[in-house]
Length: 324
Image (cartoon, rainbow, N blue to C red):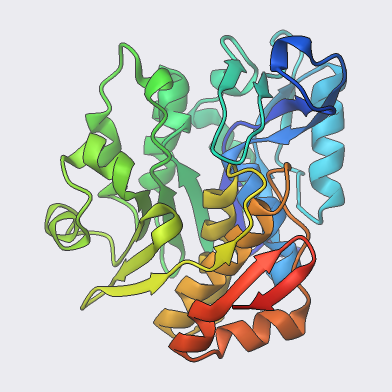
């Protein structure tokens, strides 16, 4: 039997539309269809980092769903555990792109993925899977999706790790208790969160205070936006983010997660794990898409090995790496 991917990502992805021309969104006539979804973003980033990945979800029996599965597979992702729902549609969302962050409008109520439940476990092959990656988006979609996440967290782990990216989306938690995120994250092995969303969920974005509130997970990563990220596995370790000429920020957090997980699976040192996360986020910040074009290997190697001054002087632009 062929072993499964090293990292298996479970969660909804949607057809995403971004403007294909400049101008106010209500005047744009041409839109580009692509793919958006936290878990599939992580899965699509990993093969370029030398880590095999799989994506588990449900899509509608419609052109959007078929295109999504085909395009995610084209990134080198195993999609064999995805299912097609003959009754429910594939979700979609509209992203009004901008360097400072832009409105994202979701049309996902009643989607195929929102109907997923614990029965998904029946089609999972976990042989060879080293990390099961989840996010806080899935339990917010429906009661059945919450039950699925609980069932995944309850699976026997052995050497397998569960990674949980908080990904707090306030609009999804309307009428639901976001305190569930704290409970679910506490059962994971690796927790990634932004300090702003941690403030909403735990009442603090301070890494040391968060560690006191999350004693269970062996690894805690607190992201501080463009400032950097802190890894807490013992003494907190802060790494400044790489400076980037930002085109559009959505998807950078998922890319960071992929970079961090890839470096973790390779047994990299703590600072290199954070830097790999920053580097992968940077390539997404340089594009309107949720998954960017990988940096040349020599550039990655030089930045991973850079001393603190070299790292701080580096800047990624559309033309490449510059030193300032």
